[in-house]
Length: 144
Image (tube, rainbow, N blue to C red; front, side, top):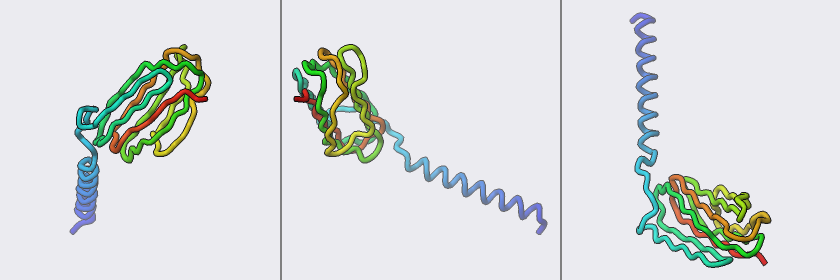
């Protein structure tokens, strides 16, 4: 056997190994993107100075929810009870003049935060999910 044929065989083996690794990695990826639906048991309660959102049984969910929320104060308390164990979620809150007063990535379990000081009025709450698995549960209330 010549050195050249030995080199070709090693190159072919490396290529086959690389193709196999790529195929296995691709098989592990979630290929079906899902959107929020009835199977997620969504509940959104939007009241003046209080907003709660819950969605359960997330399974590779990529979607967005946006709420207009009347906030009479300038600071909101944010209580996270989410558990997104795969993928990512982002919660962004804009005040009455469009300034970002809160941005949280990732959504966490048992986390207590406050927004920055913002202008009272109509606030926008935006939830974005990217390949999320688990559950989302957060409460916003006017801070005392």
